[in-house]
Length: 246
Image 1 (cartoon, helix red, strand yellow):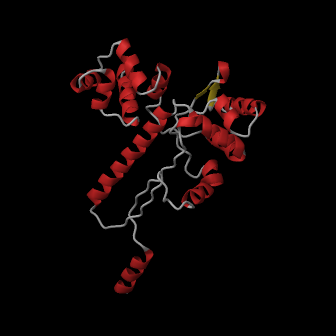
Image 2 (cartoon, one colour):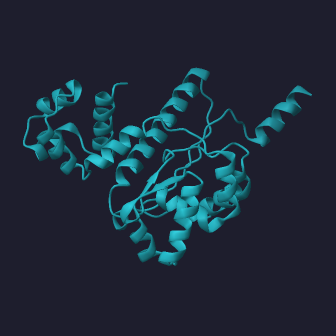
């Protein structure tokens, strides 16, 4: 995809991630909805209009450039990178904060870590080629934010069961919590369609997180999303089937 097209797609994702419709964006830009739709479909943006759209979704050109580069996603960390994070829980926690858009100063202000300790951690992450560390303590990720942990890799072996148990300990009854477990019989075609919808939901979740990472940490909340589907039947039902066929 050409760079210009990727830039427009990144803008579209940013608008969707903010929960804005084209009609709402049009009102913020003092344009008609048709004009906004045409602008996005044709990619006909002037520099001034781009700046207005960025202001409406609270991003700057650096953020959209990062979103444009992040389009591929899905890359796994190397075994060496995962092994280093698996061996050092504190380093993993700091890397997680960076993945979610926390800055050096925000981390020092909100967490029990000194500037010296964080400087050492940043140096280790840079040596692992997980970040690029620049002026004013600005860290640029060298991996996509929606990278994949390696199946059966060091990180999953070290933390997966603990993380899942902690996640499921909640009562799921607060404003931002929800859990449902549904089991029904559907056709293979319907099951495949639902799988595609869940894949799109995960993509939308990551798009929103990518766009919102540009906001100050105080305006963000850590959210975990558990999505799963597979052919499955409760063991009590399977036992009935076995007894019937015996």
